Image (cartoon, rainbow, N blue to C red; front, side, top):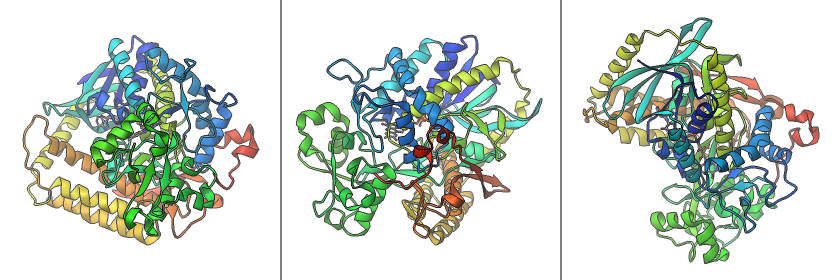
Length: 584
Ligand SMILES: Cc1cc2nc3c(=O)[nH]c(=O)nc-3n(C[C@H](O)[C@H](O)[C@H](O)COP(=O)(O)OP(=O)(O)OC[C@H]3O[C@@H](n4cnc5c(N)ncnc54)[C@H](O)[C@@H]3O)c2cc1C
């Protein structure tokens, strides 16, 4: 059995920022960070466009309250305002912090950190390192963590949370993981566990996310009977490169790109909701408009995409501000955006929902009470600062603000906690049996085929537009595909060294659980809000649905319940923070 004061699962921005905060503030505590990929290969490394903070380097009148208002309005009023307050008030200080850790942000002529425009933000407040912002930040965090001596278990796959009776009732006591390199199974015991396992883009067939974004942390949490919050809110990013789905950053629109349909129109002007902010409207609105253009036959040549045009920016600006977007267009679509527009369509990008936590990153249960020994941060958590729709550049910010805060809080939390008692044997036997069970599957269905069916079902039945019948049919189909997985799977790689087939079989279980909770939550919310568009309930319904959805497993079935939204910023400024119609 391996032991640490704190165990962190996930080495992306949230996990590594948390580990670093503990190493900086509680140097005597031992921290173990487990990641199924090398930490620097976590999806955070792919973040491009920027990280938001009211630094006032471009717009001198910007301030945290305006940032908070943009975030709450962007969330379609579903964000918890106490969490938004922490996010936006702490933003300037965490950027300076990152700079002191060595992050090389792009600079303006006068030497200040540059800030660009982003969708839904009133002022230019996204700080960036060209269009490789995540890369610049994650490398420095992991380097600093190594320098301070954090222990990293890379290429270990966490399969189970240990949640059992402790001194004062049920508590989280550690995890069970297996090494992808050697297939060795280990129980890791800790005084607290922090999940920072990222998103679940791979639930859909077109996504900007990496292969590892399979929602494992969400599934681990659901498997112990705890709820997931607001899972119906899936962000489809407007500009996935067609047909592959990889992201063309919002930075490209921030720098002034146009969205054009087959008629050559900048069609954002034709929708009343987006006619002022045009291409810089929030993502839910922009994605819906693109989907409408395509459905109504105004995709390019009547096809499934529209154009993103940057030619008017000129070669020099393209090469200095958005070099990576140009490179992606060239490499993956054979299009040089200096001369030709890029083909784009919406792509599954971000999970607004996740493991519910309070503002100190402690996981809470259905009754809103804290779960002892359990914390979550980053994209897998739902604080909720993004509500029904996240603004661009607010996620890296969430990871850094709440990663740091989670580290500080968990460090304080374990200071007076004793190491829990665990008998590791039943856990080891259980996981060994589970792995053997998968390896013995000799049916006729390949993992890739089953996964494709699941992803197609999610996209078709729970994509940008939803309705009651499509969701019910989708849930039925998921059930059938899952039965195929249980009864007819074929696993023919039996090696014990980097058995990727085995890992993909495990990830597929996460995709099933997460997919089912997303669909059930979407079915239960009979209104349209933010990224959740119900064709049968096209209006927002504050009287009945200004509340968070909770989806949880009971006897293997998904049940739903709800929780109130925090409205505390209304006390500071009731005009701004009282729900009103959203227009840009
Ligand atoms: C292409 C792209 C561009 C983006 N650009 C921006 C941007 O410009 N600005 C912005 O604000 N946001 C952006 N985002 C969103 C943002 O990057 C992510 O939300 C954020 O980086 C998530 O960080 P994280 O630390 O929560 O998780 P991740 O970085 O996804 O890390 C998850 C970690 O969990 C580990 N893990 C998962 N499951 C297991 C398991 N079972 N066992 C062990 N380890 C596990 C993984 O190995 C990994 O280390 C972008 C996202 C994408 C996909």
